[in-house]
Length: 292
Ligand code: MN
Image (cartoon, rainbow, N blue to C red; front, top):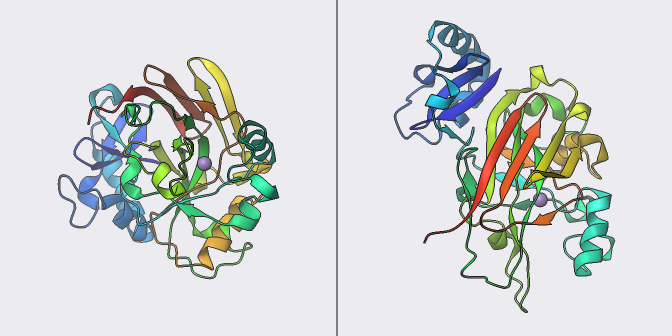
């Protein structure tokens, strides 16, 4: 099943004929309810049959008649893996003489970082750069595979990790690079509003049963720049989940974006970014200058 959030944070099932609204199935849903997807996921085992029935009964809304939001606009945590592809670590060392992958560090030794969940934006929202504030700094795209937590996960083994995954989505981990003698916290450089575009849907794990098949491609102004394959990760998906769950409990709806493959490149206002993942979908984003 492909789940979406749309318009005033309604919940829907995405099918070939459009979006089938199922908001009424989510306990306590109301317009503007940015937390609804977390509650739906937390009670998925009992709500799934009702979601299926409501989707079957709802008339489809054509995709071009709705505004898609991030499929989970407000997870409790947005985890991210740094330096999780060997070839990306190498390109960072070549271009910057360091970065997250300096000194041989990788996700294997660094663990996770967090992005502020307020940086999450939807698949139809522009990626807005604070370019006026940083005229000489560099903004980069990182097209990443992301997984969504299905149930509270604390101290989970890698062997059991997959049973805690609800589904998968795409996240672009946009970044302001350090520079000009300034080294703001990575959390801040990656947490500007709209720096975590997510979508277009969450595809439930039963439709993507083998995480090794997951793949995300990214095009910048029509040129393919990135091709993330889950099998190329330094720390794979079961181990990312397991290791984070030994730090703190992961909550239903939490999103973990798994790191950037090589091909990271600079973005500027006027650019167009396309990301696509088999089984998940496609997002096309305009890069603009922030107007505030
Ligand atoms: Mn990243």
